[in-house]
Length: 213
Image 1 (cartoon, rainbow, N blue to C red):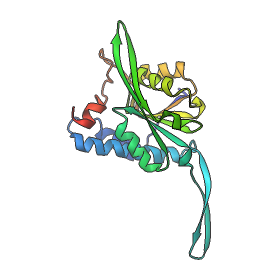
Image 2: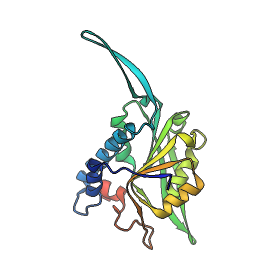
Image 3: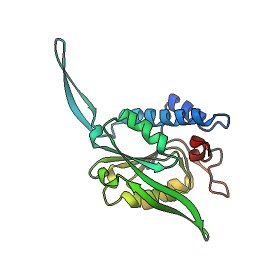
């Protein structure tokens, strides 16, 4: 499937395993989610999909020029709560990026799953930037689609990607259908959902595990 890419870097995969392990406590979980954001950012930078610019520095005996990530033109969307530590970790890799916040949580309404997005902050700063959405667990896809709807006034979906830890087939298919320009980068997947719309063999509720709630 063209809109779904597995990041099979063994270091990232090890961090991903840690985040699925039931024995990991909340403090260690936050540290690992932050590392996940940092290392996924590094991996993305090596794939030629992020904006770049040429930079020159003066050296002791001359000057040196190379191509670097243009993080002034990167926006990161923290999908609350689960994406918080991941977004901050990715922000460590791209220190000049702009981090916006969107509260998106899913609930059942009749036979459907819907997302409430009643709080956001900083989405205006995403305008004209390359946008990375961080949300560890992509299950049904409704939270991310709700988030995209909130920021759609400011972004070009051709310059927007999703980064997650584990992705379910249902969510991948839904985003592919409704937002075909957006590519999903994940550590694990495609996975299946249980009757409660949680990922089977997934990490559980990453927000709860991060914040010990």
